[in-house]
Image 1 (cartoon, rainbow, N blue to C red):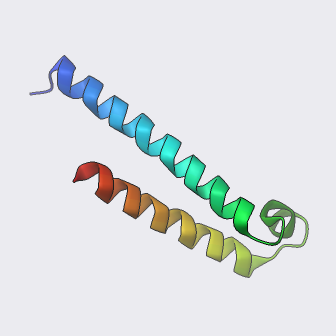
Image 2 (cartoon, one colour):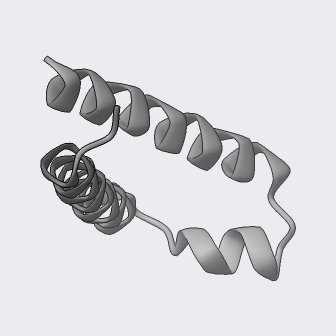
Length: 69
């Protein structure tokens, strides 16, 4: 049964995970030597788009595992 405490804890952990994900992805974007969004949108760099997706999935797995315990 879903109680209010469980619901609020789930919501808090979800928001925490999203914030950590955005900060981590922005940090990765900042550390790369090129402008990722310009490369993907204007130059249609498919390899960089795939790499960005892989980094996003990796970050999500790490954050989810860390929050879940």
